[in-house]
Length: 287
Image 1 (tube, rainbow, N blue to C red):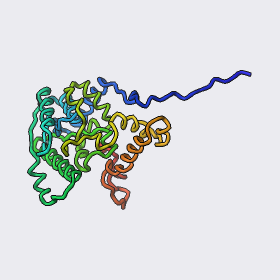
Image 2: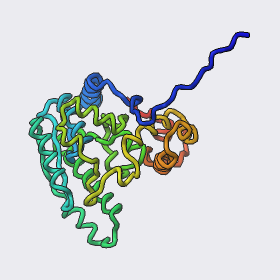
Image 3: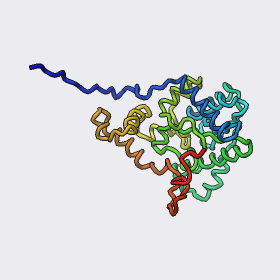
Image 4: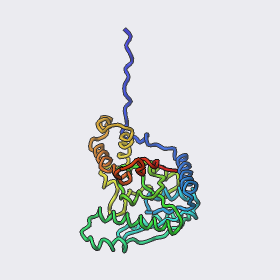
């Protein structure tokens, strides 16, 4: 009797990020072309405005825009609050020095505190949301002043985790990084020549002194991205846990994704007709 060969499932290395590997040179070229096409051809602008925080996401976005439109057509705005770290300003300056772009600093403390004086009991989360929305007010007003299109900087991991302020960070009409996991943004940053000190520093929204993204999450970006990769491929949490990922990590990611679904959509409208905007009347991107 002939025995059939035993087929075993491949062993998954849960500490590997191979599934998230990118062709960085090709991706850089593609995103540069994407930004040029979206801003110039489809929307009729020649300039972009970016909120430059000193973090890797806004730095990568700025490098892409500078290559797509020319440094002279990229206007960056630094918008520190009184508790913002000096390091953030210094790192934004490194990007300016490297690219030769226009950078303006607009202090938001007076505007933010002008409202918060009426809400002295506001906690860190509320204060951070006020700061984020104030920055977006400035970014859109500057776009009107400069005749430039606001460009978003949020990455896929942040967006899936809902780690942004609704109608603030995710408001700009064009976002080149929105489908890139955080670990992929780091790889792209190295390809584009972003200063290494920006790439290596702990990611932070810089809304509260000492805050970091990963301390807020309770999980590292590398681990979150590995789990998100399989979750967005349709694997249920039980299957991902069986693959070897720690249950607690999987539950953290699932809870973040499930609880923030609403933030990734436009406001929910009561549909009363067959021409309800974005439900029937317009395609998701109506060119």
